[in-house]
Amino acid sequence: MHTLMLHGHATSAFIFKAQTQQFRSKLDKSYTFDFVDAPIPSELPLSLKRVFKTAYTWLSSSSDDRTNVSSIRQTASWLLSYMEKNGPYDCVCCFSLSAAIILTLILDNRFSEKPRQKLPFKSVIFMNASIEYSVFEAHGLQITDEARDFKKRAERILYDKANDLSNLANIMTLKSRGTADMWKDTSVLLHDAKVLPEREDCFGLDVTAFPADLLSGEGDDDDDLPTMHIYGDKDPIYSSGIQVAYLCGKGKDGTDMLNHQGGHDVPRNPKIALEVAGLFRKMNRRLEEGGM
Image (tube, rainbow, N blue to C red; front, side, top):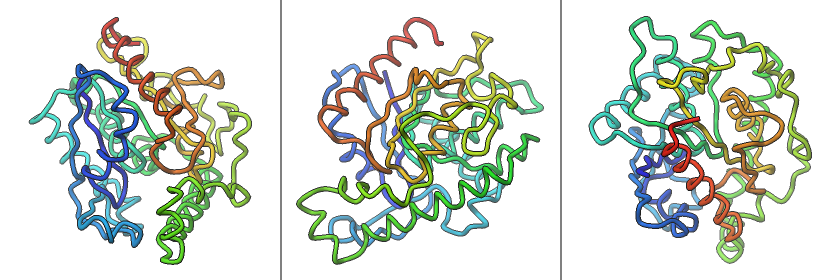
């Protein structure tokens, strides 16, 4: 299984490769990975400047760019060209902000006025997924004010957490203990991760009001797009990851969903790494069996 690996905001292919080494080492050589830098240079977080020199992102930090459909589509077009040149891929594994770009490709292809094209990837593994509502609204899909407000507040908490990590006073502490401790304080989180929400009220979204095959292509073998979802119950934007999973046809039973029990980071706990590797194997089996 050949997988395109997409990092998150303000990091790089090199960093993502190191972050995912734990679970990739559990897979045999038939699993291959292509790591690519996002197209926009970005400022490195202070906590990483001592170790790395370059970072990239998928959208600029401008709030206008984050919600501007044309800006999002520009990056999506760049990524599609990369995949057409270097793919096709059996799978795309996208962390955080890169998930919003993959969702844009899927939605724009689904609603295209031209005949629907076959995307240059057969499946997606979302990891701590981020979502941008403006692309959904561009296709006439309704987003409630409640959902928009919840997302904005959750992202603010994530931003504050990232600032804590970049605080110079914390860097020496994190060196010895890793980043796991920074997510232990769950008192500021907006969600209750003890139970998955109802599809009718998924952090302000009534997922049942959206087309059942919106992101999965379920029901048409030619368009099947199997997905799996990795999220952390201590992630401030946990809500976005669950919304993406539900919009891809997943439900409260948690099928094809894995809670890595951490925050907004790549799971590196040895036990969880085995489970993540297991998801890759499961996806590979599904593709060999023909999709969904």
